[in-house]
Image (cartoon, rainbow, N blue to C red; front, side, top):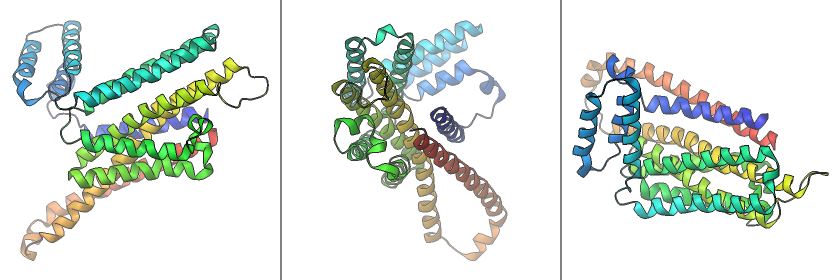
Length: 341
């Protein structure tokens, strides 16, 4: 129950941050036309040499009437866009997809080898894991199309994965449950400190809060897929690891597989994304404040802009309070996750 609550808190914090970054358009017509907004988002992912193709799709959608027909066309276009290899990142896309499929194959081997099919609940677990893997592959496809994100995001993913591997102490049992390997320090280190570093460094190098947030997302997703592959191998190799008295091998393996799936396909990406978002925004504000102080001109210009500055100050306070609430929610979620284990 505590794990579910922690998941809801992480997801809620991520949703708030996402909504702040992706504000609704001003026009009422576009706001209510969800197929159009979805297709506009997909067209924004296209490479520069395919802009005309995207405009053609938007023009075709404008001539289609009926909600169901518009939805079918928009979703088909989105699938077509995402199926196109990312320009300049086809190798990264292939590698991360192979990593996700590798984890799925190892899980399938364990599913068959340990006879998990006999328990209907394990089929539910298999469906959940398949949906999570597909969602992360789609996320990777989207993020790899963003400019200035691929290199730093993948390096950040290696850094996050290395931190999880270090906490596991490179033992099979530690790979199944890295959070318990080093005790209470693991939660603040893995769920807070590491994502904080990724968001700060990504923003500082890219010079953009938006790029820093996307770098944190790609780092979390790529690290989660990598650790899921490694941890499923460990689960199968040690027959699920230690288990409660009376629990059979199949039950222990099932529990461990679901544990690593939730940890590396849900909690690790969400924690990295959420804390990385906060770190990226704070770093960008710090850089902007320093730049503003450096480029500050005459006192008269400052006084002339006093009214606008007051409004900006009030908005900044509101944004600061929002981020404080989000940080508190994430810390609470990490604590609940630790207590649940």
